[in-house]
Image (cartoon, rainbow, N blue to C red; front, side):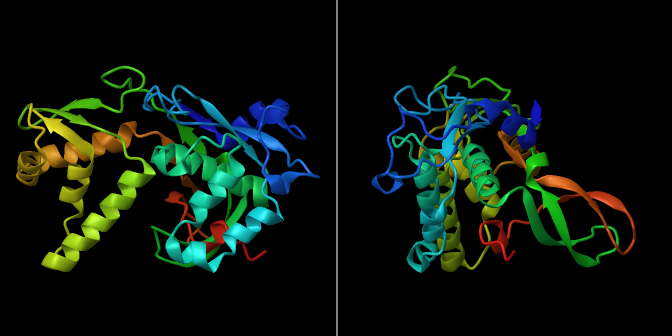
Length: 281
């Protein structure tokens, strides 16, 4: 199920207000109440546990970016620590109970895209290499036309369960896996880098499977599961990864691009560079 962010913003038009009496304001907000907009969550809140403030929550309110939030974006300390986007989200999401690092990656990306549009508008310029002729040129993209891919597969344990099933095509084994949140992605990056430093080898595929697979045909012991995943037939490994990617909710960052050199119209993945939150214009 796909819906453009432009349509979502249109649907949320009636929700844009000069403030919300039920929303707790930051002390720095007194004197001015930034407009508030509603953003749909691709996961529809289905995978968050019942105790989470995101449980079955289908949308979030975000306030518009002001100069105070631009201070966050320009903080050298936060940028160096890799925390700048998390702190920005905390400042913009009106529900102060929500931890952006515990959000599903797709939900987080949807909110970040909406924050970026609210701050600087939908126009985003990036350098793109044409997949047909190889020429590189600057291209303007419209972020309001991006599609949201919603979660259309029910978790195995029902709402509140981040547990999904897949039967491996070659071995026939049943796998249970989870979708990744920001904390899991950060740990995966650290673990992958640590293994690379220790062994001098890239193990991205294996490390990703270890990060997401909960159990395989009853094997849930970390040591045994890691060994079993390392020995997984390539056909099973690829099929599992493709399936996990296919159901993962999020923002489809692809958009049509017409090459100025060869004239071909192709669909490209919008490259996210520093100008996404730090535009030069």
